[in-house]
Image 1 (tube, rainbow, N blue to C red):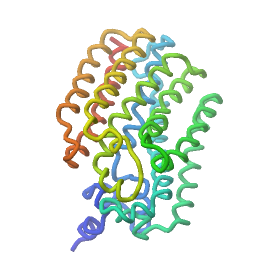
Image 2 (cartoon, one colour):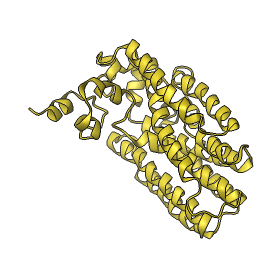
Image 3 (tube, rainbow, N blue to C red):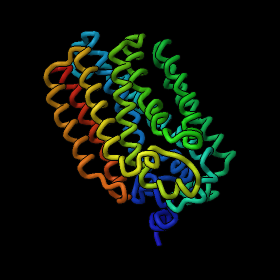
Length: 314
């Protein structure tokens, strides 16, 4: 058996098996990279897209004529999304290590399986936060403040599933913070279009993370944690339709406020079609379908990103 085969055999059930982490990671780093979900980039993309949308909208609002505004800033956001999403996963797993040990899909994760110690996880978390701080220091002072505030959300989000059926709402507040940070990084302020974009992102997250939560709703009942999947149940399609309609409307409104060009609205036709596709395909009792539709939101984020670029230059 090759090392890759052995790693795939021992990998957590919810990991991506044939990924760069399993293929290239040295043994000492494997558990830590899995802990920060480096083998599953979907979370990084979902965290990154609102920030990139906001950067382009803010540049258009400021009449920046360049085709790719603030490319250096976008690269900083890419690195920051990777690092801070990883930090958030470490915090989440520290909160959830006992519950994860009771669930088939998550019991093989580094903390509940014992492959990474609690002390090691805290040290690794500190390391990631230092990198995040170094990235944040590259931004202007007001943006640093906005970025620092997000740490509060990162810490308290994992607690929400224990006290409310709406932890997906807190995730929305957390994962879309880049919409505020991107605007602040470009303009040094937070203005109405950024707030509208942020709100649209929150409703987007409410939709896609409810889909994701349906994978675990039976296990969540056993463990005793809450989610919108449990709250909505068979009415999930109705709730998601409302969330996605509000999301789509708010994104259009944000584009209108900054006077995006026609290319933005053309691309948003496809973005809206993608949301409708998710609603049509969703079967809340099909775990594989729920995971596939959740991951497909990366494509939605990409379509909106392309739309902001088109709306900026065309």
